[in-house]
Amino acid sequence: MRGPHDVGGLEEGPIDTSVHTPTLWEKQIDALHNLIADDKRKIVPRGQNRRYVEALGEDVYNTLNYYERWTATMSQQLLEKGVLTRDEIDAKVREIRDRLEATGELELRAGEADKI
Amino acid sequence: MAKDLQPGDPVRVREDYPPGHIRTPVFIRGKRGVVTQVFGAFENPEITAYELTGPKKMLYAVRFRQVDIWPDYTGPTQDTVDIDIYEHWLEKAEGRAS
Image: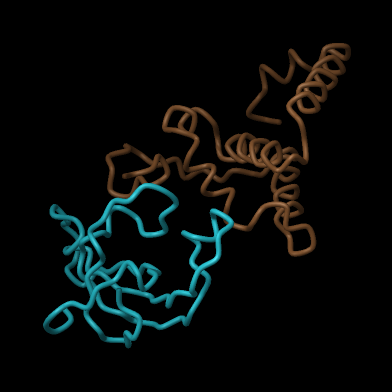
């Protein structure tokens, strides 16, 4: 079986070699991953996130960018571990969406998603 | 399974395509290379990724010739690629290192 991540040797066309500057939310996701996988908390084992990312399925894997995949799989793991509930995640998403809508930022961000 | 390999030993990567979390890329399976470094015994990430424990596995650096990997490779024959591979993915190969 070849997972969606294991693409060595497959035809892919030109490679985008432009430098990507990490955005704030990407740094936050990276930091959160370090926290839940560190030796003190050990909520998830180091390396397990990679297994979850590989198991997202080809469509989802190829639709999400790198840290979007991490966001999806970290949510999944925190739900499975009982650290967060689906209701808590949904409520927080609603809260943030309402806040951004109120300030007009939501529309702006949708148009500049790659700059956030 | 090859756990007592030394630098210079010719090896072949197991040609197997199991499901699950695997650390040996598909493009190198079934290919022949030469051990260049012995890193020592480490937890097997193919097991620990499932929150299981198992015996530690020897980890090796293996060097492959690009011409042995890609049938249509047009670069110099001395071009190589080094890949870190766990013992359970390696078999001893016959003959001299290529």
